Length: 212
Image 1 (cartoon, helix red, strand yellow):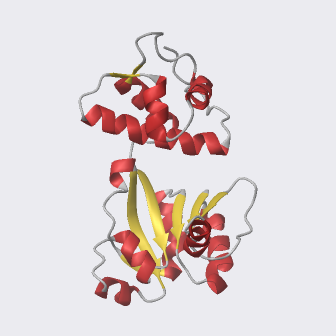
Image 2 (cartoon, helix red, strand yellow):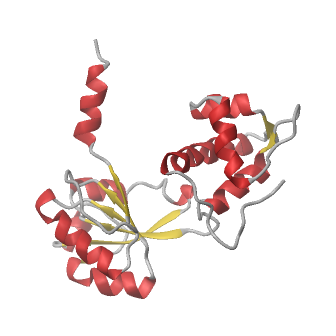
């Protein structure tokens, strides 16, 4: 089995990256259940994609699996984890520790997926702490110094829409390269910065179409 070239990242489409995360999660569950090998059909069904799509996605990393035997769960999981940068916990900060931000800070599933929320920032840190947040919460004036000192590249943004662009400008200027945006606004960022938008109201609107 050929592993990805460690000298640089493989150029993979954004949608394929998302599916790789799904495959990794499914492989983790299989590993936890003591499964050693899995067929492309079974893994694809668990991830909600077609087998042909799964095989195409995995082909970015070389030749996987053995015909008639399937994919080795532990090895494939390790290769995907390394490709996604999850060999070590990636530090993440959260900006905007209001009701939604505080709820996310209390979520304990990030570390299982390879991420560690190391700090939060808010205009009113005391209010966030009063909500039961145990992760350190600092004044938002300290964002730049913290990001540079800790070389943080990822952030979760939960600030009101009217402040989101100015805050993301500061984050990008400090070295942030990836933003998970919960603020209901389209952010303008340089081409080298990736923004994933999570619009809860829009998702509910989408779901409501299928309700009869």
